[in-house]
Image 1: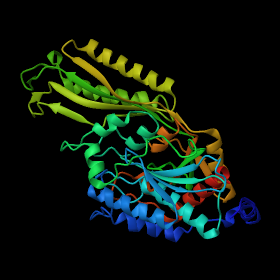
Image 2: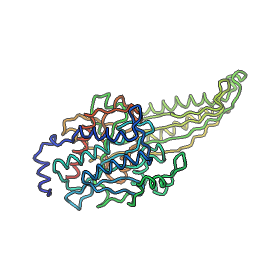
Image 3: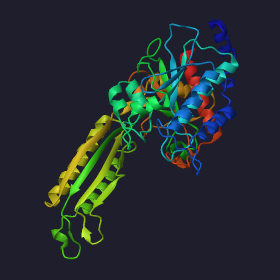
Length: 427
């Protein structure tokens, strides 16, 4: 199609008339979900395993069947390109990831990839050629279940860490990312972060919410203004192991009691910064872990999250004040706090956010803002290109779980919003 015809197609048809094929999207998700399917209805498709290779191969075949040109970069990110009518325009991208948690579901990540593929299939069927090229992206190792850092492919693409650092990462068996990319045939030759025609004009990522907010408000579309920043810490509390019966209460160096007070403080610190403050102690190791011995050592994690960096730093200060207070209360205790992860808060591009909001309204969907509490590839991509996300509900807010579920109609609605948000940039 020439540009004049493209414009005519989009202007003469009502906006709501251009919709994706929801049944095909659902079948695509179910077909792909057979790769790594678990007995409980979920998926286990860890990054760079044989199952990941099969999932990648199927995705690449579907992209080629849709007439797209496929390239792979040196960290294994897959880019499928549908050319536009204007060679001077930067591409508009959309995507997510294919890898899963060990006991993952059928929708986390893969929905964003297959929704993007469905956008291209729909445009093909309707004979619409956008002015700007479109790219569908499947990022490598978003989950971090097998290799760290998490969001590896998008992180290398955006320059958050080097290709050499990522390739050297190894799993529990000592196998490196470089080795496994080569083994499954996805060690590409493209330089990460280099896009034909220049960096993306925009990037959109559709995703299940992985939380309960949309379902609680009985809404189908979440407009995502940003993602919470994260600070993670490893905490070691060292006290004095001693006999549970012979040591008086006022003479104890009980590391577990201090840990309990720290956990309560982490919860309080987050509640003081509602609605976006988060505080979690998800890992606890007690030594010697004996019924009649006072705990001498406790190792635990602390996960703090907030939408603004100032709040995140204030939460860190509160955490350290709690540590100082606990040590001051009992000289038998020593508490070491080691920062291990920092993701700055992410604020998505205002125009991209507006495109998502307007697309939802134009299709007749009520929407609400939902801040992402999880990390996503869009968070890294937002460092190098305008970006935004689209959320749809998942049942009971459950994700990273084989019971993860999303309604077919909700997934279709999210893909429709993706289609129209993309067209606002690409046409």
